Image (cartoon, rainbow, N blue to C red; front, top):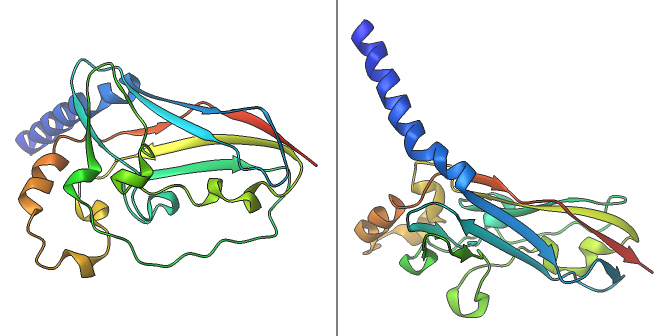
Length: 196
């Protein structure tokens, strides 16, 4: 029994040492292009995830379903609105497959934007913050960005099972997946005002 407890302690210790330092050395900063918008305008939000570790790491950009936490990485905004929206968003339930191109190396000291090069990379925007209906009411909006890779199971990242059949790059995906730190980070809070 003592040996079982000791082994459990060692596994916990080494796992913690591998993941915990990343929590304090990978930071996220959220900015907007201005502080005040008119109703109908869509705020331009920019996310920067800083790799302040001494190592190069791999991170995964925003995937189809990341914005609603259907798959990892979770890439979403929490928005404190002046009052609830009248409009509710609907989306299809399909998700594309995780691809080798979705893994991006972030060198020590460099910055990663999970939405960068949307048109060329295949990354997906956050549906909520790219629609004017989200900001349909005048008042103060408080916004934070959240990013999480906090799952050890690659299946939580892959997307729809239908698209996984006969997928030839699974070994390469597995090797890249092992290089992604398990992190859960939240940005600073920004405040914007919507005016009539």
